[in-house]
Length: 458
Ligand SMILES: *Cc1c(COP(=O)(O)O)cnc(C)c1O
Image 1: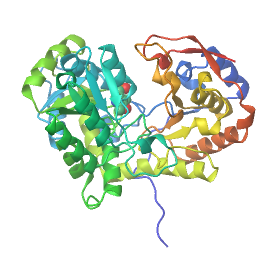
Image 2: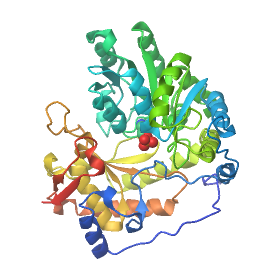
Image 3: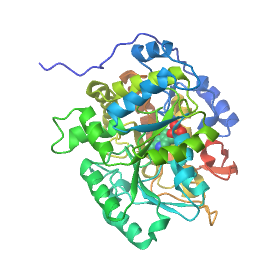
């Protein structure tokens, strides 16, 4: 008999979580104005709001905290991080930042001007926010398959090279500062980009003289999918694949709260020393001196260790098999979600579950609130609230898909928790016909409204 699969780690420390009653949850979510971000963490039983900064660090990472060097300039922790980035990602220059959006802020301050156009694959919300804040435009060139949850495609994060070329052709060259490639592509379901696609994008970029920026938050999960799904890569190590992936980009921004498995941190890395000089000016203004950029020395140490652990096959296999396990349970119950499952989350297809709810009533948000009421499980809306209003017309933007994202924190929950999530969602699914009313907005911020939006039940 073949041995079953089990996690590639054992548990050294635990944190208590508590269940609650439906009456309590009804009160709490009302007080939170039906915004899941507004809940206190102790009002949540299983927290799938995000996989960002919510992972469990390893014993080795915790040991690294003790070795942190808190010198203002030239700390050994900075050099430890520099060495890890050179060795694992292959970039000579980098700037630490306090998280991913800070990396975007610093880099885009150098590269993006008003009226610019930035093509890419389903830009992440903060990325799009930082582009639009500069009165520039993000153009989504993701392949069409990504917008059909039932179509099986191994690399739904891929860029459609024809769409990309038509943007490059039809836009004056000086208006396109770079092409951005998100690996894996969060907004379309944690979907990977293939090496073949990266090569094709590189070819186009060279033809039109453009730089490529990787939004690299989940680069290691991307490499895992390449190893499993792309011909010719099955015998390569994750570290070899990662090196090749990054060889096709000029610059990268990183939210280390994802695939570097730290609670806080980020960075920009590049090959060009002149860009490093220009970005340093903004880093010093917004983040901190160039050898710490908003991070503590101990956090830079843990980050360097985390990069090494996240690019090991056994870790990635454990992580992604857990997401596949949850996906299989949902499949068993007939619940529709983005397939195949992504690297960090399940994206539940809310429109398919609540087809009669008008899109002006925030379909995925309604499903998210119902799941919270059912079992104290907190997911997040990836739909109309997140899509914000059009910066010019101020009209609501209705995305093709309304997702309820269930993001799985790294090394935190067990498959028993996955079972609870699956059954809770099944219970909501079973009473979907009784869910006939959604929400209306009573307060929203002018940009990135989903974090602080306040809602009223209709
Ligand atoms: C999380 C994330 C960001 C932003 O990073 P923060 O650390 O949350 O600021 C940018 N891009 C992608 C793809 C992400 O997943």
